[in-house]
Image (cartoon, protein in one colour):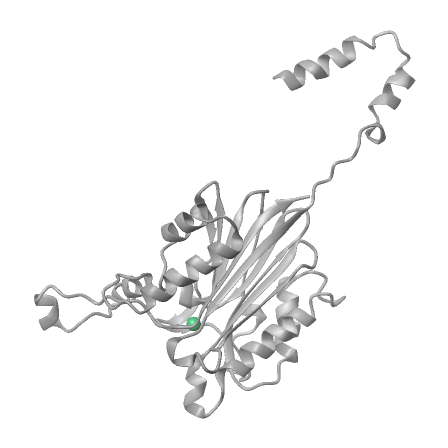
Length: 291
Ligand SMILES: [Mn+2]
């Protein structure tokens, strides 16, 4: 209200000046152009599967400060180990290629094109789920997602956006692969969301979202002093839940929804399928800053 009153008084004090002068005074050039630019402050934390500590696990991720920020996570599909293939090779090479191609002219800050070119450039045998998010300085966040990595946007303590996992059937996500049978950039879920200063995004591999509920993430973020602390605390909670056989995790809930459960005789004894899911856990937290 005070703003519009000031605006009116500006005109009322200049009624006798020539219109040419008034126009000059009102031209945008007379007012400093404050075009704000948005970018991320980023914190990351990775905890490998307890049995994969020595090899560093099979998740891979990168953070780039290009434009407003580019974030990527790939989760190597562990089934390849049964065929004597190290599942980490494909996810790591895919993320290295994605990071290298961000400035590619043909990519032109389009995440789907980025994924297409990164996948084509990847020569390792294997497959991976993958998510990439690119922030333009105007606040537009572009997301490309294949499989069950995920992203949430938190605004004023509420989750206002979340990705949905893509899967063929329970525990078999869409994946980019070295084999023809896999998915391609055509199968990716694409979306763009306008971010505001103060928003927080959280990205993770399924090891995060299978073990931590959104309300827990919101609480940790609001209780943490910065993004580094948020990322570490969220990963620690995911790790604790993943090893807790009594925790009724998002993974256990989903399993029961899909018809998996304990045998009938145990159900009669009041038991149900519970527990977290041990896995590699990658957490990236991005807080939107204005400059
Ligand atoms: Mn995983």
